Length: 318
Length: 318
Image 1 (tube, rainbow over the protein chains, first blue to last red):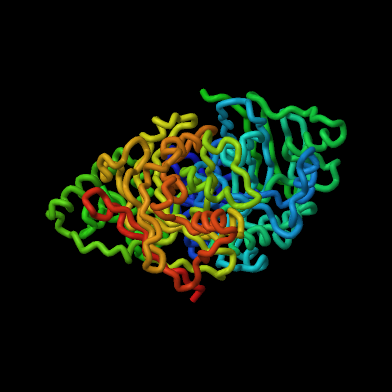
Image 2 (image 1 turned 45 degrees about the horizontal axis):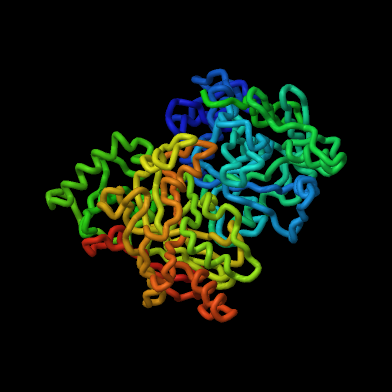
């Protein structure tokens, strides 16, 4: 099923069920108002939402309305945990080829994950409001999962079973500001989907579909999101819960989608600049500026948008 | 006022108001069930809770009951953000005096903060359940604040005004496992208190009271929490919201309380071991083991416990 959260001027919004083709939606009122409630009590609530989803897809839901991504918050507008890291080795290899950086020991043995701020994600069509253009404004177009409860010490296979929903993410970075101030905000795509929505493209914690990134109207990346993924989502989640349990509603992101085949393009500017630097000694592609736009989307094998598109503009404060 | 969260088998518990002397409590039902609700709507709800608090202190609350810290969850059992870092320069100086480490540039210019996991804090009397004794089990006895909404770019003074509640914290560390797996869980003291509860001991973002740490029944630290604090809470919070707003219910911790005067003892083992290493070439104090106990408390100028005590035991999984 596909779930979204509509803006209603509250911090957590209103949960809606969205049809498979993203054409219609229906409030989940009567089942749950907020997505976190569903995650807290998944086995009880998910089947009820699934029933509504099937009714909606069949065109028989009485109070269905046209789905509008512009009215969406992030599917989980704030979360109790947001962890991400580069799960694609080609991303790290390219970045580390910059002068004065060495490949870290254990790069292929363990994922690099870090906690991020989850007190307020932005919606898929919200502006990215930044105080300044300084710092090197970059994006990281990526996939993420929302988890249920996962036990301490869960294996990658056990962790896979704890994945509830898949999402599309856009993590905004300020490259020169470090990991705290340099990660000001993250947007997620209009709908979160259960893994079955991806059909056989979801396999063993990897999503074998193309993620397309368009910057200022120009396609810069169309990259298979599964092939280059060194650590799959079960491995990322297992790594996170090695020393402690992980609670329902945690979000784990895999970092910018990347591929060893450079012809598939880039999903973060830093990678492009690193390749330019390796080739010519200096980067020629600039970072983002106010007024720049970004569009990120994943299409299923049927050509339909899986999550809906993230469409953002970088803006100064009003 | 003083607020706590009682266990009720739910993820968020039940909000209770606790008397100033920590002897009695009263459910906040009718005002709010969960602390996050109060933080989301502070100006409306806090005065109502304050009224109940005053009634409770006067002995006139009809349904008051004896307060039992053993029934407490963390005041905010899960949070949308948990950021902490060493705000006490003497802590960093001691740790960095270890061989092969250098003092970072800008150590006194900007605080070092990192995001931590906030999907499930443990209560003040809950066991610290760890899979293994390996990795160097350590504690960080510290103060923390819970914030309201703070705007992007807020100055330290503006950020100070965004502090809603003070708490006592115990951040468990596994020293050799890095910042993600090495920070498995955090406990908070029984009650969160509004800054006015500290009287004139709360001054400009610093709490001038002694924090006492007792390890296996032996007092190892009794340290003024204000004197050695290089960056006060307004500065920490201002640093966090430099590039983005911070939302209500975020928790900011100041890292282990430390003091230039070593006779005030230590509030994390790593500091003690670093001093030993500097003195004799090797550490002689071991890290914690299963069965070890920890007690952390802050007393007000009147001798009464401000937050109640954290009392923990390190245990293997059941």
